[in-house]
Length: 227
Image (cartoon, rainbow, N blue to C red; front, side):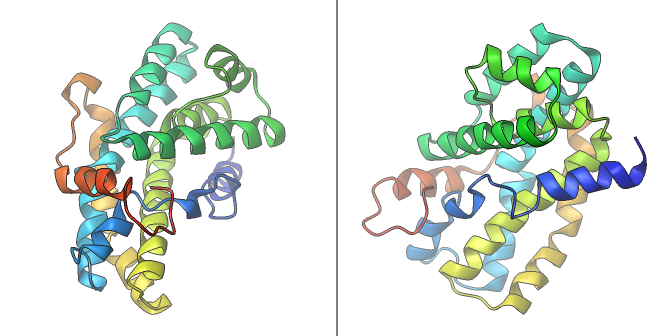
């Protein structure tokens, strides 16, 4: 595949317009704002940086890399192990649902627009469901999109969704939101570069406050977001 074709697919799959419903999720940020833990641009930057570098962004990156390699090698048994593990790799019920529902939506849309036997097989073996990083990893491998570019694009999209939620919740203006995105470039690049070399049994998260906020969000009285 040419570089331009790979870029086209990544830009489409990880665009805010791709029908995943990503705008509906805040990853616990909604409670963090209500509790006064995130109040401004700097707080949002630190929150998202922690989610990417030490939280679900890091574990998602490792799962994506493992799924990409298994799909690229045609190893269905390993891919099934990764897919099963991914269902358990979120710290709360809401963030697990977030990843699973977005993954299922990604599979549905991508199988229709960019059909491939690997995607069909994944959907068949797991009843149409997969965590989002596994679904993206399999699609990228199936379509010949390089792993490094896929990881960077995935983590950029993960960051962008949280920043967008923060802009609505705090609230912040568009310029502040873009300043946060710019400030996150380093942590996105570092995480994307480090996770492929780390075995899954050495990957963990260290973002307990994010998990706690997600759990508190489950019983939050008024909510705009599903997580």
